Length: 165
View 1 (cartoon, rainbow, N blue to C red):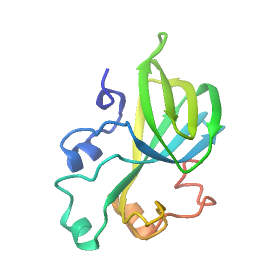
View 2: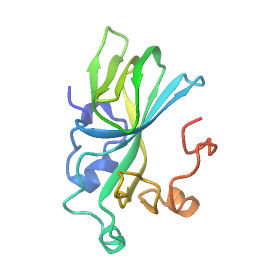
View 3: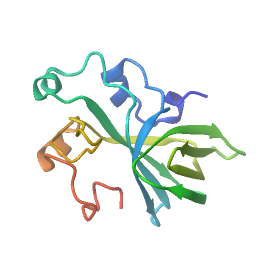
View 4: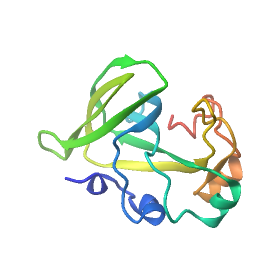
């Protein structure tokens, strides 16, 4: 099954890209494990910038897109390698029955695998200018109007509502 069929809300990315970009070669910025749900939230930079980006983004001079992928009813988490900054491939495959999937993130500095409900959510989509050193700390242009009102840049990790806790 495609990544698109695994997302509750694919329209967010479809509006920007026309289709869902492949989740290979993504920069994995953070992995958030949440005991409520229980859940896992991945913050990733998508591998390409949309060809038909909003004019606001073009005017701001941004060149990268970031989002969060949220997974619920998570079980059997295995994080055997985490050495950021890292890039990797995110795969989502059907697993067992009862509407479950296995998610794997494998790359140069990350090895993560878990089982979860078979749908994921896309959240906190933003565009930013990648720092010369690959950082994402500058201003962000958020797609969601609430995010845009609340945040001008990436909030600190203590901002529980942003990181899914």
